[in-house]
Length: 139
Image (cartoon, rainbow, N blue to C red; front, top):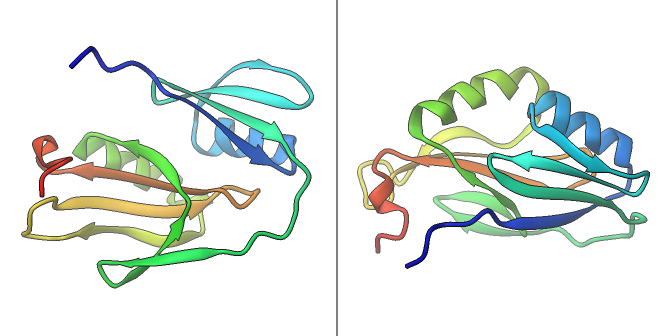
């Protein structure tokens, strides 16, 4: 397999300035290039771009995972175990969680810390960490 390269993800936001403040000031992401319609962010080494899109009615969908209603779609990154806990602690005063930080699949294959929340424009994010990174794709 080749060296892992950064991914590029563009997501819709109905308010560029509210989303900019959230990603820059709450999640502490470095801002890159921008215009009045879009903003680039360094999303843990990956390129996240928020693009203005007029809000329209979207039906929310959730799947049950570990007894919790996980929003679909969602995106995020896998952090190192200690980084996950430090990040969760830093953002908790500023976030309303969909699923508060907890340990999923405790004692099983794929044991992980996870949390879910929405950005101010309704995009669902998940951050997670594995106690053992080799379990990321374990069955």
